[in-house]
Image 1 (cartoon, rainbow, N blue to C red):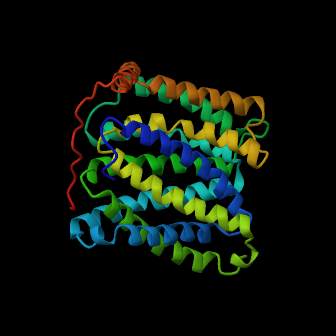
Image 2 (cartoon, rainbow, N blue to C red):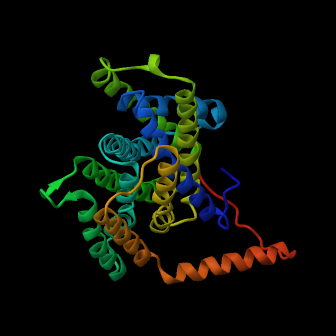
Length: 319
């Protein structure tokens, strides 16, 4: 996506956060009509059709390395999506969205391990802050019982962090259209197989009404758009910073959940848990990022007065 440049990549990651935040609500709505794996198959297959039509010429130039690398990374996305649907099936969309933000803590640690560095003190303090928040969100202290849905949300955070880190490490120079296409091929095959095995005796498309079809198409468009944007923007944005921007997801989810499906974060312990996770996110944000944001605003103001700065040309290979 050539319109994503170094000076606007963070803005597109922000757009992704808003779209992904809304996707929890649309998936929650669709669970009332369709079983889990059928929903995931339709997301993947619909996205595959869109990508084939839009980027057919570029898809013909793929090589073996691109295919194998993209398939391997896509497995983390498959596991993340399965965990997300399992979480939404048994816990609130707001809880799911907040717990998934543990990726802000996990991603820097994964990157530090992959690059053979010790995690920063900031990451360690952030993790120690987030753990009590997770306990407050996931444990029923009256019986000391863990909510399975919240555990699936935590698994979603882990697999998404692995997906984001591996995409940055191994696919940063791959054509985003090719990467997205292979990801959709991989997930379509896996989700079709799982739908045939696990969903064949459950309700199907016959129960869908016009609203459900609209939500399904909207979800497919969000799925395709977010993957294309992320794979392009990660050429310029570190995954650690991307996960911080993605913390706007639960805010979007909570607001939409209240107005669309009448759902909210309930209970003092749940609210306290959310606040601790937000605190962990704030700790994770480097202070220098704040300076960069101020510099970006000043740069935008300067350009609005006629002062233009040169843009770096985006570079990627087809392998």
